[in-house]
Image 1 (cartoon, helix red, strand yellow):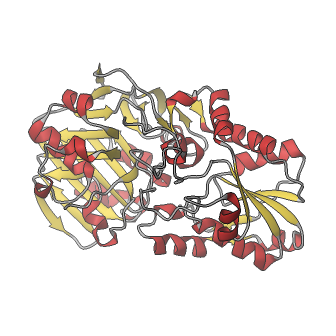
Image 2: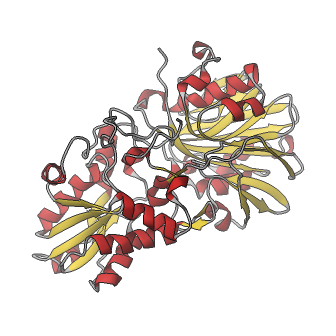
Length: 467
């Protein structure tokens, strides 16, 4: 049986290589394991993909391989895998292709004259891909299977109506001048339409536009197909009515804090989560801090409400996110090598009690590094999460995980909260652990304009988004 590989990723579609490269570089926080680009011209699709970050391949040399006069559109991708396939990172990287001549260059691959190519963010349910002979695919990736589904079995409209799962997909075919952009009806994964130098483009988050001279136009409509034309215009077709199931974890953690996602500023959500955390857990302490970067806004609001000093105690040497490592060992190494205490602040806080605000505790890799550093510095603390326990067994007795959002939380993952009481979680973590309640999180989103009915909360005990 072919192993299914899911991924949380960032995509960019633009009409110059420079713009596509700049956009995707600003989305590096969505995946650091591999990067790739498809250059599309009239009757030609060429692809390069490599392991590692975007910056590992110099833009000047990309121009040498993908000479700009031949192409009118570029599809760029960054990726991290949710199954440990460290030996297959390069093969599983996007874009996935059909046909073409492949040149194996060691740490990168070049494909010339492909029949079709796809970049994709999200996760597709296996039953939706039953028409595809998975043994005809080069990888176990659901993205490649979707490309085969479109190329050999279905039109794009039928895919939108029948395929279950989350997807923002961009597809190029040799026999078509248009790039097909599809966003599934749930809107679970983010995608926006932008404008740059007189032409339309598509990126995962509007922050990529803000940082690179582009202009946000609109969120891609869930249930719609966008046909991106070579001249920089587009046509939109609404195929199915939206049935919104936004991924709350995008707001709580995945996207850049400056992003406006589905019309709601992410900063507003995180501020409100911090406020409600202060309401539910008003703890007497000497200071408030956050671990390691993402929860800063929530920690600042918590400290303001309870009138406690905010300390910038932890720091990271690199911006990479540990959860995007391919294996548990790589994640732990990333945390141990990357996260440290500011020695001057730590010395001043010796013997004091603090509150550490975190976005979530999933496997407890981060929290164990936090506990080690705090004990070494002689600091005691309470660990507060503004996301409720993830991976628990639901009221129906079924284990929870990420079922379609493309987040690295599989059914059989080692969740610290599954089957444990709060006291047992704290004992396992080595620190007093507390969580925001589910109603509290729902209230934070509702106060910012997103009702609970529009959120997928399956991983924290909510209903199945695909039933």
